[in-house]
Amino acid sequence: MKDYEDHVTGLQLINVGLGPALITRTTVKLDGETVGRWDWRTFLSISAEWPEVPKMYALFDGVSFPMGECRYLIHLDDYDDATHAWFWELVAHRLSIEIEYESFYRGEGFKAVPPPL
Image (cartoon, rainbow, N blue to C red; front, side, top):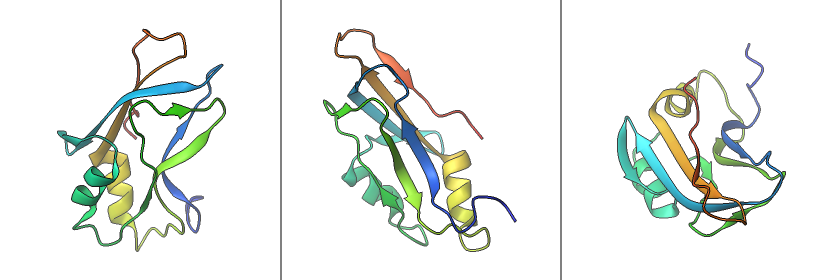
């Protein structure tokens, strides 16, 4: 048994910086193709045919993500290997959420891209 069974499983965003991150843009890729920004509209369009709709947290341009904040961008509350193998494949290999952000000083153009698992 894996240690994530019966627990929340998904893509998590954590701000470990010294201050808030100002989100400037998000880009969602599914199977290598850009499908939009990480917002409700994009989520609904890509999740329409999934066996179960996970919970999501949208990131909008201009939003501040506080220092120390930890949020799942997409997750299932009670992950089970047998039932949710499709979800693991999705978050581990198919779905990519790139996040561009800056500090309050502006102009840095930082980018966070999840590493492949």
